[in-house]
Amino acid sequence: MTSLRPILLVARRELKENLTDWRITLPAGILTLVFPWLVISATEFGIRYAQRYDPELVVARLIPYATMVVGFFPISFSLVIALESFVGEKERNTLEALLSTPITDRALYFGKVLSSLALPVVGSLLAMGIYTFGLPRATGHAVPLDLLGQIFLLILTLALGMVAGAVVVSSNTTSVRAANLLASFIVIPAMLLISFQALVILWEQRHVLWYIAAAQALVDAALVRMGVQLFNREELLSRTQDRIRPTRALHTFWAFFRQEPMAAVGRDSGTPLSLGRLYRRDLPQLLHRNVWAIVLSTGLAVGAFLLGWHMVRTLPLPPGAAENWPTSGEDWRALGTDSLRQFLGGSPWRIFLHNLARLLGAALAGLFSFGIAAVAPLLGTMGLLGFLAGEAARVGLDWGALSVLVWPHGILEIPAAILVTAAGLRMGASVLSPPSGFSLGETLLLGLADLVKLVLLLAVPLLFLAAIVEIYLTPWLALQILGG
Image (tube, rainbow, N blue to C red):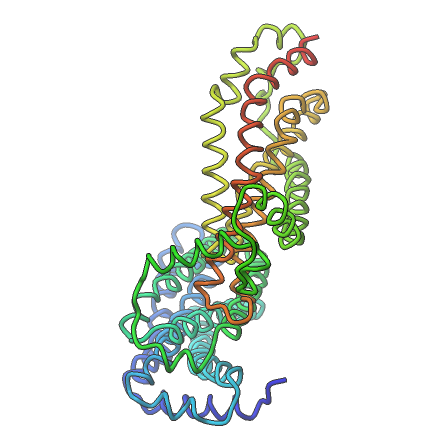
């Protein structure tokens, strides 16, 4: 259990430095004390302009949007402060003195996070307070209290995520320049989030903001956990240069690939690589290592199917959209096998490469999203199947019989998709709790080696067989059952 006192000592030291640096306090003061009055003037002008149209409708959108803008601008300094937290001290030659203090790595990390977060959040609250106080006197319209709560939660969770990510970047680079270049991986997602929140406000769907805040809090927890796991003062002092070494990365990947999964974690040599060993020893170990990810992926697939079925009630197809669907045996026989093959994809190779590329692309995208992006193809496919099944049932078709268009190849394709999704999910999430003694890069390369093994040993054969079945067996079975 980390004591609070050393965390506060580090935070107080950092806050003193930040408050005495005019390059931080002057711009932050302008954004906090002056910018809200500019937004109040802009809001007043917007309300006057809207009087000729629908003022209440505009006010319902303009005031929440302006409140969000006022609150979000001051927290931009949290990223600047956090990026400079470790690497800036290293350039000023003050890092060694800080790291030599008798406090734990965890206390040092949380102290840096707290100090980077405190000043921008206080500035954001002050700016929103000025806007809330001044707006009724300028326009006669007040800011709703529940909106202030929503905006504050969004600001706090976004700022914590930016700071946690920036501290990780700052502790893994050797110069402020390198940290600023890597900051784009934080700034771009943050800007996309703010843009999405603005759209939600403009659509007057403010209840969605609570869900966004909850999702941001989950991401914050993941980023903070990753920072705690990866922070190491010895590595911070010993790192002298940032250099990409593709050859070394390839050697490390190959070393993990040719070892048994459990031996790779223990850094043991293990038995020699062979196809027989891969299926006899590696595959069972990989399935055991990914068992919870497989269970989670399966649950998400079932949930997506049920959600798609439920969406039929709220977002059904327009009337007449299903009129051209074949409903009788005669209609199905009229289609013929060739038409069904063209409808399903036309070529086994095309289907195989398409499915493999989608799954691998999503799994690799999971590297940058804690594995979240890896589930996208599986959720999209299962959600679409659930929607089509529900729509068929809604218009009176036998969706059970229609499932013959899916299950012959689906019994091969869906398990393959679940396996690749699970491996991508675990690979992306592995950075939250890397194995003992493994760096961030080694953890990702170990997960990538596991992913490649699962793809080559199971996913590729299953997807290839599924593509052959989809073109040559599924159309024939469909005509036998539906056209009979």
